[in-house]
Image (cartoon, rainbow, N blue to C red):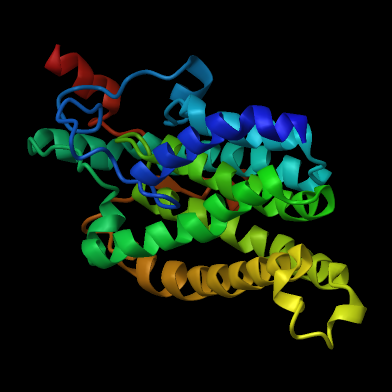
Length: 298
């Protein structure tokens, strides 16, 4: 438990920062009027070259540290590690080669003199006061409590809960990276949908392992059953299964996604599918390109 003690203070600080940013769905800082997302005539702060090519912002270092620490101190399945890298890469490539780095919506907003919203555009479709409470609950159940488990629970329980926590924090980090003017709003929503769908299998494994850890001799001892780590771990796993199943199949798919299908607000890129055997999208040349708009502004 030496490592757990050493990282306790840092983890509390990082967790509080995540809550300040809105938990599972990131919301830009309302108190910072000079935020890189606020001014329409200002380019977002450049990330390093490879991320900038696909419209991604640089990941927040405090949040990036959490999955790195989890992957270092816990055994994360190889497929989970692969997905945490491959899926963000897919989103970045889709933004670049399918949605043209959101050029159409970016240029339209720039011509009209509109500011990039402080919150993701899809966020405006929801009741803000209620949604903030929803996010706070999601962050507490999915991040805060599992981090506490990592710090104080027996090693077997910490290990069992680690893969889902790793993937969820990767999702949160990616939500920071996609929230900028150069990333299409549709993909901003597809990010949590993809991560959440993949996490369904991780949640199933977590619940099965938590149930198997429960000593069979205590199933009939109601006076002691709530005092064991194994029972608390099972309740945490079960609560996460119920909540994230609802979040995936109701909140994301039925409430958040449908408004994003309105192309009058979320402009699509001009693409064609008539090349490469109609298997690969190709962005059509257009006169109102990002480079031309930038040169005119200069």
